[in-house]
Length: 116
Length: 116
View 1: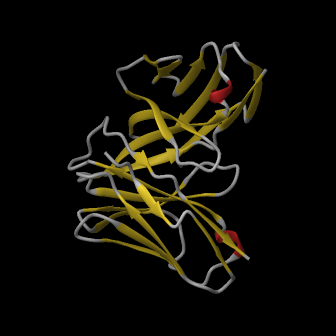
View 2: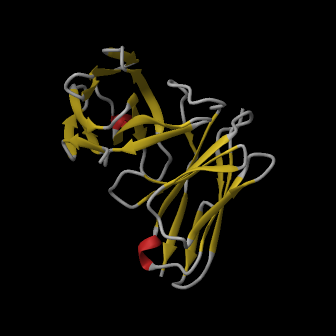
């Protein structure tokens, strides 16, 4: 069964500090891994996407890593800001049907709160 | 360019009623997927439609149905509502003529359904 597990479930950090969120997956066949940021009551917004051959990808203060051998990914947030407070969701895609039928498996997310 | 739009924003129904949720994809996107996100959890895949045909179905009862129109907009219908159907319903679109590995899925803001 395809599964995506994220840790920690929730995290509170002070503004300006760094943090790292973890994602472990058992999804096959692996296509790509994405990190999304979801503000409360809003739809998820894509931060990064990585394929099998990519080890790291950055988007501003967000840096994602991928170890396809151990099936682990991390999202590192540098110099956190109050606006980083949100749920961060790891999503792993596996190839399904042709013509746009990729299957996505979502993690339950890490709830991050940045405080003054 | 407008992103993915969904209507209504919020909806309150009672048990046993029927509901229709609507989604308009980003212009040029032919694939629409529906997700159910219960509070505190990651989105769960319900349906994917591509070129007006169902391309994928998640583990949801037959009370859930959907369709895609010639303009690629989509409706999600839920019959005989249960209390457990209360959730944020997300629509996502992607260009995906083929199963492009790095094709990003863009989410709408969601429809918050409350069943009383």
